[in-house]
Image: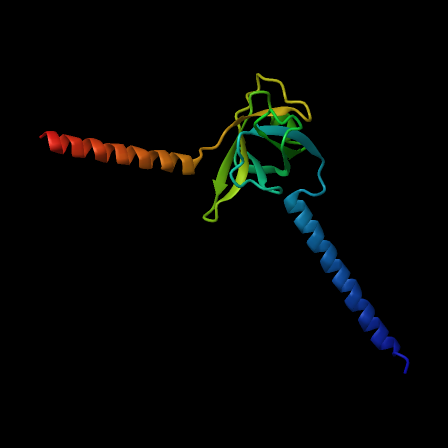
Length: 166
C-alpha cells in the first residue's frame, strides 16, 4: 500500500518542525554556554584542586567567562602542582591581566567547584594566550579540622593539669 500524498506532507512537516526545534535548542544552549565564540587558553597551577573537574565554570567578577578544559600533572615529576588548563571567551581575554589571581571556590549546596578570577588592574598588560595565571591555593578543611582536633585535645590536657594543680 502506497502512502497518500497528504500523509507524506504531514510526515514531512513533522520532520521539518522537529529539525527546527532541535536547531533552535542547540543554538540557545550554545549561546548560553558560548559554544560559538572564540576562546583563549590560559594555564593555572594549584597545589591541590579539591574536587575541581573538567567543564567547571571560570568566572571573572562573578560573570561566567569560560570553563576548565583539563587537569594534568606536569611532565617533570619533581614539580608538585596540578596544571589546570582553562579557556576564556575571546572578548573577555584582554581583561585577564598579569596581576589576575585565580582561586578555587565552592558554588551552591552541592559543593560544585569553579575557578574565580579576580584582580587584573588596567595598569598591567593583558596576559598573552597560554599565559600562566597566578593562583591562591584553596584551604584544606580536612587538615584544618584535624589540627583543630589536636588543639582541642591539648587544651583539655592543659585544663586537666590546671585542675590537678589547683
